[in-house]
Image (cartoon, rainbow, N blue to C red):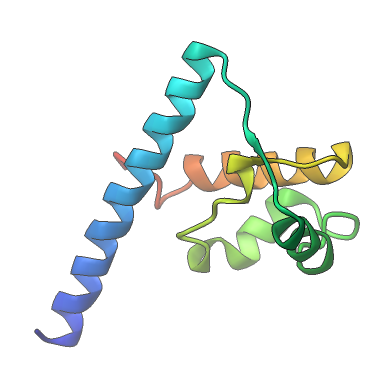
Length: 103
């Protein structure tokens, strides 16, 4: 399998994974279930790696969105409302962008 074929296969797998993630989000919205709380390691990574106090979500996605195919931070609940809002907006922008399923 050549480089282009591998890249296409990875993109297809990523699209399918995103579609499954979106289905889970929709199911959660319909049945009213809550997001699982972020475990301590994920919470610490989010707080230390995501520039939620310095960079607007749209600017962050504009700069890094192409490399964020497996973004799952917004699948979890965080105790910090500011962090939660930033993470959720990044996820919304990523799903609405050019790499979103069905685009």
